[in-house]
Amino acid sequence: MLTTTVSGRTWNFSHAIGRNAAAGNGFTQPTDVAVAPGGVLYVLNRGQEGAGGVQAPNKRIGKVTITEEFIGDFAREELVWPMSIAVDSAGNLYCTDEYDKKIKVYDADGINAGEWNGDGNLGSPSGIACDADDNIYVTDADSNEVKKFSSDGKFLASFGGAGSAPGKFNRPWGITIGADGSVYVADWGNNRAQKFSADGEHIATYGEETSGPAGALNHPSDIAVDSEGDVYVSDWGNKLVKIYENDGPVLTQLEGDAIEFSKWAKEVVESNPDVVKAYRRVKDTRSLGLFNRPVGIAVDEDDNIIITDSTRGRLQVYAKEKDYMDPQFNL
Image (cartoon, rainbow, N blue to C red; front, side, top):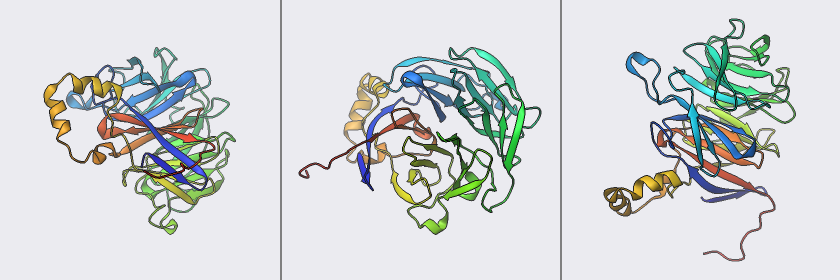
């Protein structure tokens, strides 16, 4: 559905960004997206393995705008198993690398600004987020904890631990910080997401089987929250994005609506007559628009929801519309 309305809320599909490409204005297995002021998006390309499983040029961080302008990319041949990215208030970008067990830091221009391992407290860094004070929260899939660091890597605190009880984790992945300092975590192995206070006190759970088939999650990979408190979870296993009220109940889901080519993809397609002919023979384009393994998700200052559609090498963008009114007739 290009427009989804439920419980007084409306989400409109806006557009797709990108195409499958190993360089330039495209993405290779985009696994995370982070927003910066002015409509700037950073896109983490996990890429494909190089010889011997080491760094490859298609592992990189792309810098684009939400209106699909390509600014550039960086971190080529510096990343091995990159997982997630986050931007602080000064525009610095932090990237987790599972292989190196480090956080790699870049300034707003993509210049390498160093790296740290959190005083040796990182076993398998996965998701990453910055709070209002530029403290760095990292999900550690090895210790099944959320760990808090200063921006220069000093270990400050942790919470969680292995298990399925409330407040415990099984290979946690994506993480975000709400405007009030609440911490939201995609609990990958437990097929759920959880909300905590800034100090790690469990507040709510999203996606448990008790919420019914509509709300249940299958290996969620990332999580985001908008200005009104609605919670978005990348449901990797079900190839959906689930939307929940802040206290837990499911609202609806997004399935993917990118049936039209992005600007970059259209340029490539229209330059190849055979591709144009093949596309015109497709009788049902709906399947082309669906998510295929959504991974990263972020919400910008205008409540645009940006999802990395990893296998298809693109982003899908939805706009949350305020004061939506139903049309006076149906087509």
